[in-house]
Length: 405
Ligand SMILES: Cc1cc2nc3c(=O)[nH]c(=O)nc-3n(C[C@H](O)[C@H](O)[C@H](O)COP(=O)(O)OP(=O)(O)OC[C@H]3O[C@@H](n4cnc5c(N)ncnc54)[C@H](O)[C@@H]3O)c2cc1C
Image 1: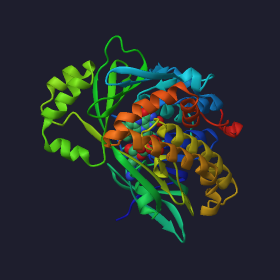
Image 2: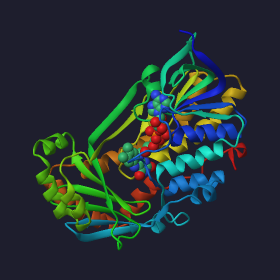
Image 3: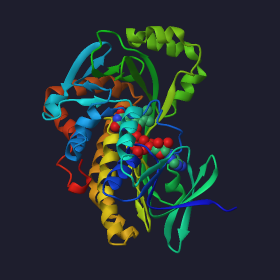
């Protein structure tokens, strides 16, 4: 079959945070970019909505902070740990990062729309929705673009460089034969949403109960997004017992869950997310680069997935710009992105793995002692040290002024 065909400099598969940042920055620098997004729009449930201080630092450097913060969102200023409804300790973002004393709580559709609106002010930016990438094009030993499925049939996008920013289940990664170096799976976060009680405030909470651990996050504008930390493979067992035992657990866990628990008739209101991290051995091949979750997916511990993905995207924009200018989009040249990001990603994954072992453990010993340990650590400098490494950029990123707004 003959395909419709377009030509561009950079074809980005995936219009999530990483793909939109690559597209936005390159378009700002005058590069022709085509972003292909499989969904029809930006509506996404249960996605990364807490944007940590390290993300705000990046925005500040790019002069995008005021623009992004002008959209609807909330400022989360502290986090608190409860053990069986007893307050065990808390931390404030101000102590962790004085200049950026909050995390931004912004629905992902709002963030993505804001980035898209900014990007499409540049004539060299183009984004197609409802265009999932299905195939890679090859020319000799290099990847030369993609074939996407669209409402009008297959579309061939020929590009000097293809960027796989299509998330944790990346099609580009699979089609391109990229190899996973390591993967960790600690358990599942099972999400549900309830109305936010009037006296809740804008804080993150961790609840440790006789049943499971819970992460409770304010969801803009007036909801709570709740994740139950379920050890690996236990969700199947929970479902086999029917809804009643879980209803009883939720009723005991927190009064804010009561109406939701009472209304439950089955498991449909729950959304399961595997708490996995993985790392791709080599992110670049000739003509192709993986960024964001496609290259280095983080576990939910610490809610830093968007920040890490976007940092890699900013580094990638710089490397891609130079590679295009020098007409060298070889895997060796593009490997500079991974070289720059490798150390930090591995170090954060290793911190997250340790946290996940506490969060998802089914061992009664760990479940009893974890809150005491966290409470003790919160009273010392230890927790602040860990939080700083996780939530704050260690140093400003080297960003060329062509990418600044
Ligand atoms: C339930 C949940 C809660 C989370 N909470 C947080 C949080 O609070 N804070 C945080 O920082 N991170 C959080 N994360 C992680 C965060 O969402 C991700 O790390 C981040 O979105 C990764 O950005 P990305 O652009 O690399 O990938 P994604 O956001 O996954 O974007 C990939 C894009 O590619 C598109 N796509 C997929 N396949 C194709 C294809 N074949 N062709 C074209 N397009 C395609 C997808 O539709 C999507 O738009 C959470 C994740 C989940 C699942």
